[in-house]
Length: 116
Image (cartoon, rainbow, N blue to C red; front, side):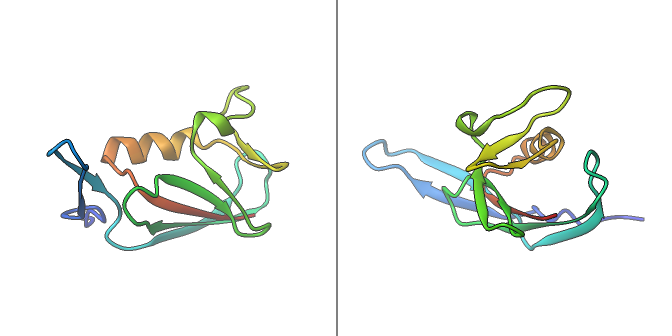
């Protein structure tokens, strides 16, 4: 069985002022969603990856509590056997696997919605 690459051909072009250079950003062609059981919490979780505009970066959104956490060093919490992002008392754990996959695909801009 062959799977379509959701990122194929989706590049965003940005001209940086004053440099004359062009930087390409990549996002998803369409949204992708899945459901499952949280690895550490054991509760049902819904995950949705949504294409994002250029310069959005990778942002996780806990839709069940309405908190958005940008995937930056400033939001790293615990790193005990897993990487957790924290903001305003809300956390999302074991993000390193998804971040590694997005990096491997060259995805720069995506909204990761997590419910649960």
